[in-house]
Amino acid sequence: MGHFMSQRREQSAFFTSVLLTFLLLTSCSIAILELEADSGGNITTAQDAMWWAVSTMTTVGYGDTYPVTSEGRLIAVFLMTAGVGTFGVLAGLIASWFLSPVAEEADKDREEIKELLLELKAMKQSRRAPE
Image (tube, rainbow, N blue to C red):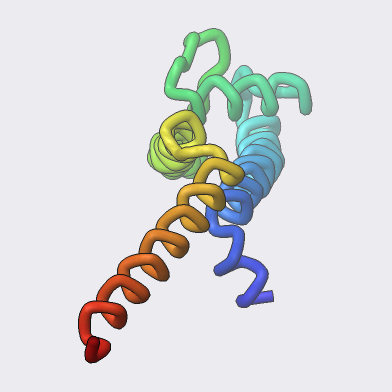
């Protein structure tokens, strides 16, 4: 598993970020629903909880749903912080995909460099050979 992840760092980092985002959204939605529904908050359904989690994680925070308990606000702070970090990683990965060379071009460049090195070695050896 470690070998696979080290060979495909960008892909594994992307999928790990997506998985982490999904887990954060799900767990914080469940937690906020459990804390807020019984205390008279305005997050009373699973749809409200999921909407709140998405808008909080993306740091949009429309204000239509919000936690009223101290524990709910603590979850909100955690989710906002995690959201900034997670979306920062995703933005960095997307930018690296746009800026990285295509694998075929990189392989072609490596082959050309190897051929040039072999030619240089052959030239160097021919100069050393006695005439």
